[in-house]
Length: 110
Image (cartoon, rainbow, N blue to C red; front, side, top):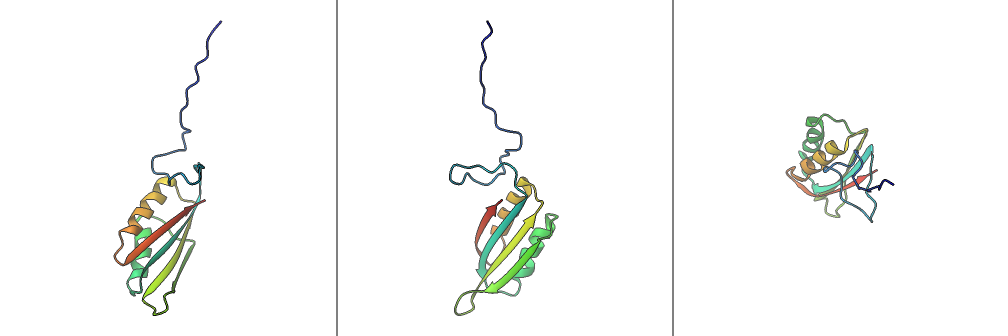
């Protein structure tokens, strides 16, 4: 009689560049990412954000920017990407966080 040994290996589509585990559920394959960015209302912020994404070879399917603070000093940006790899999404998230004028980046992976 042969013995069976069970070993647990992660699926091949689970890479270290994936987003953190949320609620115990780790997404396996996502193709859409929404970045919610807040920052200073500087006219140069929009081209810096768009340029960051473009330098990594992607074009957003949505790029919406508006002033949200009562005094107009802060903006929010909704930036959506589709058909993007997990590795590229992680790179873009890290790059957006380093853009001058950005205060916060929230990433939602689908």
